[in-house]
Length: 614
Ligand code: F6R
Image (cartoon, rainbow, N blue to C red; front, top):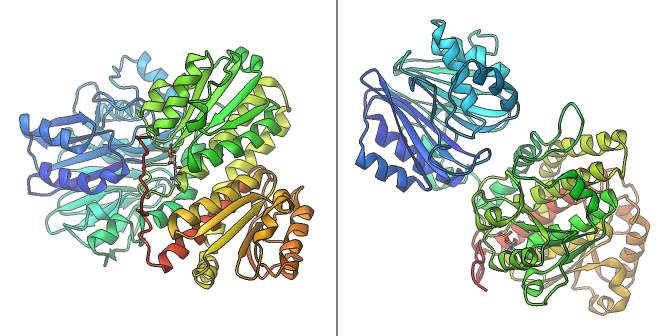
């Protein structure tokens, strides 16, 4: 997730672009850059790292002009560095592009460009676009004509903006798919562009939203919108009434709620480009280098992660054992690092971490590498320590997670683990191509189903308000939703400060039953998979002891209502994917209980986002 801004008018563009980027820095801070038109020339300034580094670069080598574009990067293709920073320019440095999203077919598009002699200076997927534009502009086309010819050839998700010294005083912006916003802000004798409203608010409250497949042609005095076919599109204007703080949270009360609602989009980002269309095989970025032969020789996989990442690891065990038939164990990093574990060379250690900086996870990775195991890290933060020390890296592509309580990183971890399980199974031949196609089709349908779950938020909120005063909660699950029960309880306790316990429902008779009385709400995950009947028996045991049951059930389960006091419903999917859907209402429940209690949801007491000390 990157941030894009643009300005065309009569004021000095540079400070305006920088202040717009400042408001978008939450979207990425791996690098930043601007391209400003100055005396018929295009001047680019870029810097690795936070925006302040760019500010220093500009201070040393000032640039001014009355139009330009700016970018703040959350790296996806190509590591964080100055040469991978946007804007990217063509061979003659006269045209520049900025981009948010992933261009899936960039490798295909790059081949003829290289053959034609274009010089590439970055490892990004984005740079192909500017070289394609260069060819079109050479034919004497305007910037929008060139964009109309280039953008339809891009596959994937993209929000793009272009400027060119060949067509000065103009920005052309385009939106390829649902990923990434493109918003035009209207001023007097000037116009603005940004990927999010916060970057526009200091200049204007009147905006138009560019929809997927549309283009905006922006000059100081005019904004035109075009469809894919180049025909004009009529656009309405919207007045934004948010204050600046609300705006940074995109109108949500807390970052956590915003991040929960981002999940359909970030799940799509996670899945993008992960299946080879020709072979139907799961493929990862160039950062996964494990050879097929080594996959076939694996004897054991150890998954590890702290807190929420640890519950994802546990779900990963169910996924990998079921789909790839490799024995897995799950480890708590703070235990593993001091236990003198048995590590072997035919073992793969999978380390899960959103931040990539959790100190115990890093130490466990070291321990595994010392023992000769291959380490694969599943990480959100690009360039983080875990991503640098691991042999292989799978990125979550979830965008920055700001709320301390992890939500979208958890569901994208589950999606990546599912992809990894299919990847391993395909290479070990544990299922045929037909079965793989079905497993992947269900995965790709998930963002739509998560959207449907989010639509049920008002019901979950009402339940949270009903139960918010309870002092203890019990979460029960079985099979692959046992980790979901642990995660549901974890989130509730860290946010609400109530005691909550997650358990495998089959363990109730071995002690947990003693807790049950009329004051204990029990959240029971009872989906219609192989564990359903057993879960219903567990629910009945709770009811028989006067406990209150909140059942998490499938849409089409007509019987569950007779066993539970309250029911939260989610759509049906493949049982191995159900944790991604089931956890969403549990995160919402925890959020609304905590909010109802007046707690600081985004920064719960005594906790930190990245645990970099023991
Ligand atoms: C829970 C939570 C923590 C983290 C844990 C690991 O909501 O956020 O339990 O999951 O501290 O952090 P990472 O994934 O950064 O290693």
